[in-house]
Amino acid sequence: MAISPPFPPYPPHPGGPAEGAGLRHAHWWQRRGVRYGALSTLLALSGLVILALVREQTGTEGFLVGLGLAVLPVPLLIAAFRWLDRVEPGPWRNLVFAFAWGACAAALIAIVANSFATRWIATATADPSSADTLGATVIAPVVEESAKAAAILLVFLFRRRDFTGMVDGVVIAGVTATGFAFTENILYLGTAFGTDQLTGDSGIASVTAATFFVRVIMSPFAHPLFTVLTGLGFGFAALSGDRQHVRRVLLPLCGLLLAMGMHALWNGSSTFGELGFFAVYAAIMVPAFGLLTWLVIWTRQRELRTVREELPAYTAAGWLTPAEPYALGSMRARRLAREYARRHLGRPAARAVAEYEAYATSLAFLRHRGRSGRADADFVVRERELLNELWRRKDVARPALDHAARMTAPPVRVLMPPAPWPVHGGHGYGQGFGQGYGPGHVPGYVHPSGQAYGYGYGYPAGPYPAANPYQR
Image (cartoon, rainbow, N blue to C red):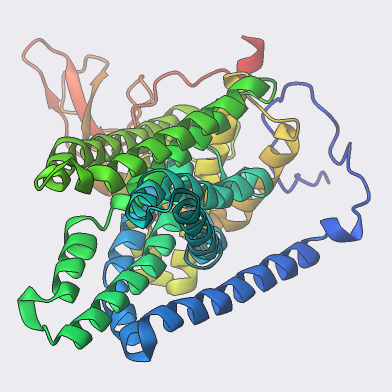
């Protein structure tokens, strides 16, 4: 008796290296445990040093006040960037690393380098006031944006599978800058509190209240906005092919230069007169923030469209059901699928559905890069890994996604053959020939022209793409 294979056949792939080809024995310094240990040690030491430096400048009481006030915008900013990353959510370890790098390593580099450069300029020019201005408008933007960009570069180089486009660059950059701003706000707010303690000011007229209003209320997005420009450069580089070496180098550099320029303009706004700060804020910062927000949301919608367009090829090969490309291309359907799994099978099932959605999205992006001629050398291996991950979770995820598709898909009117009597809607996902996949038999009706119509719910897939898009 023939035994059926455990997996349906894979879609055809373009020619590439065999699985496991090119793998070499890793040296001890290339092992994952060694890298994680070294990085964790570096961040821990940076955190201890930055903690001591900030506490020395603010005092214990000022440090605690600054910490309590500086932490307020952090959850909102992290939630906003995590929301942007919901289509293909990256692992939490990348976000934890980015925040820790910004709050510890980048902040330490900035404090040490800025202080040294400002003192050197003051000694060389014998003009402390001009040294402070030059340090704030020239030195600080270059040092701080370079320090923050290092986190994006590390994720781009060593977590390449998690860094596939613009949204990933924006999220990593934004979280890194959020960590940096957190530490910087502790320093500024703690120093302001110490000043108020010396002068006896308190209440709404205090330096602490003014600093809190400017840095936490008016401009919590300032540092993320600057660094997001660098992240966009890396995001565009991630969309480039492996052979476009010049493009992959120049785009991040251009993003970094733009970040430095906007940062310098923001820091120098106080030198433009009494209303200079508000003029720069209203004329440049707010429009730039709105433009970047629109760009990222538009990119997110384009990612969902990519999911809907690429996954039907795997439906035709038997890996996905006809409902899944539609459900996976809708954030509302994804949420309903997780809720359905949680309600019927518990939290582990909901987590499995969320993982299924993430793997399917990565598969769609991988196939899109392949069809665009930007596939990496491990395309085939990576595709097999993602398909295996989907297959392991299909028994839990498919019923939930089918339910979500039925709940979110609009009615699709399907033309059926003429009949002299009322008919019923079919059962398919509107594949162009009258087979619906509705929630049940939905009574049809006879049009006055004699044509019978039925209604089904689902993704009107139409003709599926060729199984092998590389041999069209």
